Structures are given as structure tokens and as C-alpha cells.
Length: 168
Image (tube, rainbow, N blue to C red):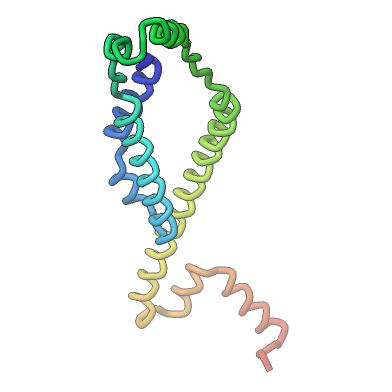
């Protein structure tokens, strides 16, 4: 087997062991995301398995003497020479350079979305805490205490009273 194919198989095998599949699965929220993630993991495992079984083994050497006895020396030598002259082309990755900038841009976008999400989550947690506090105090709270927390409502009510608008 050529060295580059074996190297790719080794790297893929090591990558499969270092991926924290369970950790990533815990971050998924929807059932659809879990299903897609499961499909991704299954596809990764299939490819990894194929790389390990098909490309990580050296091919069995050809027993040229066995064929010389049955076919004849001249024809076997011709095949042996043709076999020896075969050069497997080296893999040149033309896809990664095309998609790396797109992937990097998506990572930046992901970080921005993560920051926005964290800020929004923080804001919502504060709002939930405020609502829970209000819920506890609501039965004993005076109108003045409520208007201290919501001055815009106090202004609205004062304007309605001042303009003699009583809602009917």
C-alpha cells in the first residue's frame, strides 16, 4: 500500500478516537438535530471502517513463480514488467482550499451567534428572575412599589387621569 493512503487511514482512525461524540450530542437541542448528528456519526464510522479495512492492509505479494509454471515465463515476465511500471498517482487535495475560507467564515459567524445567544440567554434569565420576584411580592405589593419598578406605566396612568380619559 502506498504511504500516503496508509497515512490518511491512520489519521482518520486517530481522529475518530479523539472526537467527543457524547459531548457534542449533549449540546443538541432538537430531535431533528439529534437525528442528523446520529446520521453524521454513522457515516463517519462507516468511512472510517472502510479506510481501516480496505486501505490499511498491504496487498499480498504476487507469486510470479507459480504463474511461470502454469502459463509460461515470457508472458509472466511481460505482466511482471507491466505491474512494476505502474505508478499510483499521488493524491492532490483540490477541494480543501476551496472550502477552507467558507468554513472559516462560518466559524466566525458561529462565534458571533454564540455571543448573541449567550447575551440573550443572560437577559432572559434576568427577566425570569424578575418575574419570579414579582410573583412572590405581588400579593403584598402596593401600587407605589409596582410603579417604582415600572415608571412607564405610572406615566401612562398619570397622563390618562390628567387628560380625563378613564377608558370608556
